[in-house]
Every structure is written in structure tokens, then in C-alpha cells.
Length: 457
Image (cartoon, rainbow, N blue to C red; front, side, top):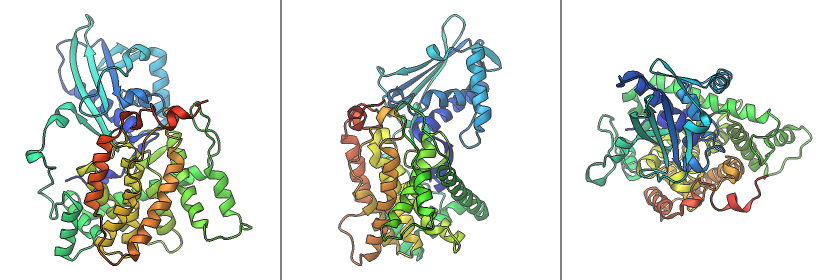
């Protein structure tokens, strides 16, 4: 069974599926080449980005991410200054090290945004091929970036689960493949959702290590907010979007500012926008569960779980509960905007944050599930149509709205005493079906919606 630490991973912007995923794919292929003996020395490598990766390539930073992976950089540990220098050197010399051999590399010819070839098993496909000096292919692999920084080979995605059902781990004490199964575990063991998740994580590593990782995730989220609140300027790209979080932050922090009941919206807005402006600039963020939706969970976490009375246990409860809900979406549907539209990104983030906040407020497991259901129900059908292929419009504001919705969903669930008419499992399945029915032009291709109705520059 996946870990919540697979849902929350440190990476770089602007996109987990279009930046982090391609970087991991290129790094994995580089490792494969170094571990396998080719028939002869390589002379050239070609990388084709297919489907959604091709349509939004430059705007989502995919070509640069591929180069970083081929140069051996990993999203979790990358030093941006060193990475920039390495790319500059690659472009100046035109030489790339493969299997201990310096091969010629022409970015314009060897890294191809292929919008014609279908991406069969998933909308985010990458084909990597190594050739010898005569032009014969020595090795070829197809990989897919499946959302949230997760990647898979064509062989992995081609394998069908037994009985067409999602396989759940048998090694954890409380396996679950649905919300109903998770809630049944809670009822049978008289445990809260975060306690069930903690018990499963204990099988994977010592509890102290899990706690340290959760604390680091929260710290990186907070650091990202702080950078976003204090960094002025214009975001990269032709549409020249101005960072708005710093100015809003100054207004909120002003001692002369009058207090209004609606100020809650402002705090959630500014924290979420700070994160997503950092993400749009290619900064370090936590996939939560994706980069495009990275601002919702940190915003709610910052506003409700930090401050002078902060309790580390509340932060862990929030992240474990939210992560458990994220696992349900990953296992039963998808967290890829290229598959599900933005309902699979900001919608899932809102659902996770609503459940996590309800848990911190002392909700019962069924109430937590209700909060998560409400958070998703009102994102169903949301498209992913980034203007200019950039993770800026509507993504930045959409995270702010998602954070406000999450808090409201948790409040509504806490007020409800009766069984809700729609279950979390039902809304996840509805999201999945809606995503499958949605036109591809509304799923992270910038071929429809706002992307074609807003002038780019």
C-alpha cells in the first residue's frame, strides 16, 4: 500500500506531472542506461514528449525538467544554482554524458514536443531512445507521468490488476481500498483515521522517522509560504502575471487595518497564493497532492495549525488524515490534471484539506469523510485549461478559492449529525467518471476554455 509520504513529496514547480514527473523519468532512464550494457557506445539520445506533456511543454517547464533529469538531478535534492549552471554548460558544449561516453546533444533536435503521436496508456507520455553512430536504436523505453510526481513504465501501466480491482497492500495491519473500508477499520479498532494511517506507516519505517518526515513536509510548506509572501516581481512567461501575495500580506499585517469577519478569506487566500506564485516561478514546493494544487493544504494548515499555540500533534493529525484521503483518490481514480482535469488536482487538494481540518477539530471518522466528500462534490467537472500553458491563470487564484472551500466544507461536516446522502466513495467514483468523459481539450492541454479565450500577451 502506498504511504502518505508518497502523496506529500518535496519537488520543484511549476507542475508535479509536467516538471517533477519528467525529471524523474529522465533520471530513471539515465540510471537504467548506466546499469545495462549496450551493444555499442551510444552516440545520440532522443526524447519525445507526447500528449499533454507536448501541448504544454514549455509553459510547464517540461523540456528543462528533462534536461535536469538527464544531468542526474532529483526533485527532492536539487540545488537550483547548480542545476542552472549544469544546463548552461550542456547548452554551451552540446555534450551529454551517457554510459560514461560524451555524446552530442542538440536540444532543438533531440528533445521533441510531439503533438501528433498518441500517448496511449496515459496522456503524459515520454519515449526515450538511444542510438548508435549509424543511427540504429540501441535501447528504447516509454514512461508515463501519472500525476503528483508519480511515474510508471509502459510495462507497469499495461499490467491489469486481478479481477479489475485495485490491489491493496496485505503487509499493513489495516489495508483499505475504499473510504468504506477505511471507516470500517476505524470503527472496528476504535481509532481515528490518522491513527489507522499511523499504524500502517509504522510497518514501513519507525514512527519517529515518520514523524520527522511529516514535520519536514510541514516546514517546507511553511518556508514556501514565507518566500511567497516576501518575493515581489513578475512571474515567468509571456502573460506577465504579477505576484500579488506580498502586497496582500502587507495589508493584512498592517496594524491600522480594520478587522472584518471576512478577513478569514484574506488569510487563506494570501497563504495559498504565496505557495502557487512560488510554484509558478519554479520554486521548491510540496506536492499536495500535485504542484498545481500545492497551495490549498499549506494554506489551511498554516492558518489553523500554526501560531503561538501550535501543537505538532495537530500538524501530524492533519497531514496523516489528508494523506489518507489522498491515497483514496490516487488508488481509486487519479490525481492527474491530464486525466481528470482540475477536479483531480485542486478538487482533491480541497477534499484532503477539508478532511484534515475536520480531524484537527475533533470530528469523528464519518464526519471527516463527509468533509472530504463536500470538498470534492463542489469541484466536480472543473477543467484544467491553463492560459499560455503556464501554471498561473487560473491556477493561483483557484488554490485560494479551494482553501476557503476546504474550511467551509469542514464546518458544514461538523454541523451535520445525520448520515450524508452522498458518500466519499461515490464522489470519488463520480470524479473518475467525469474525468473520463471530459474532452481532452479541457485536461491540461491549453486547447480549450480560458486558454483559448484569454489573450496570452
